[in-house]
Image (cartoon, rainbow, N blue to C red; front, side, top):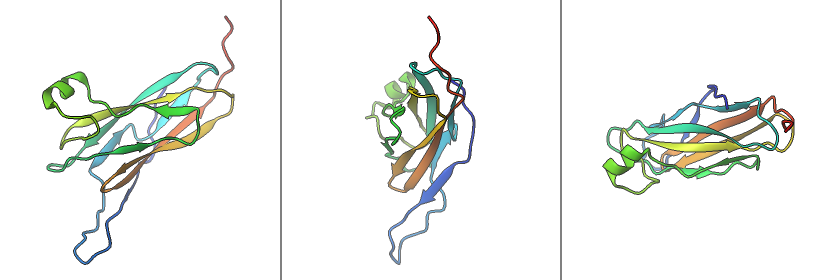
Amino acid sequence: SKLAGDTLKASGSAKRSASAKKITALPVQLSPEAVVFQGCRVGSSYEAKVELRNLSQKSSVSPRIMPCTNRAFSSDPLRYDAATRKKLGIATGIIPPGVSAYLTVRFAPKTLEDQADQLVITTDLGNLSLPIHAVGVLPPGLK
């Protein structure tokens, strides 16, 4: 699979109260900022790895991944790499300050059409959108 960058869409949300500070940017970085699957064959499955990095100096982040509406796209739960998991000894689903977790996005085309969707990553501080595109889907290969 081939990956390409796109525009990151972040939106902050804070409860409306006199003491609430406006959140201008989320302390979470997505890399890549979009996933593009190109030249995939109908009947096969493809994967792309996405890094979610907590840029905060002091706050842990507990992201939740909302599934795509297009069933050709799917994702696995967030995971740490083996060294980080062993070092931290904490549950998956919480990203401590300065630490990265990884998300695997899958594409299993059933038609030749170009497709697009997004994964929405929700946090207590706001939401991130990860655009996912599939272009140039090919017919099944001959055996």
